[in-house]
Length: 121
Image (cartoon, rainbow, N blue to C red):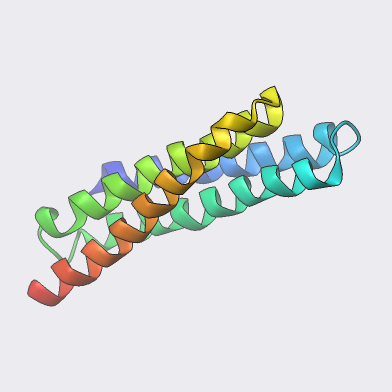
């Protein structure tokens, strides 16, 4: 379970780094709409990084099989959802936006599976 706490903390640190990058380096170089898209990626990354840390803590009270799949789905969601938004803005390849909903579905699935596994535990 410590690994999920470490992964979540790392992803939270990266969110802070990307937030600072957006606020200080991109703010004057991007249109407002693109900066908003980038900030959405940062915000969702932080929310779900904190969720992964919470899952790691929950893992000390529940069996690992309750926590593992939700944590994997939240991690995958960060990579696909936030990553696609970062790439969309930084490369101006709008096709990356087509990946964003896959990450969103991964977030939703992770939370719903957590509910189901906690209820069954």
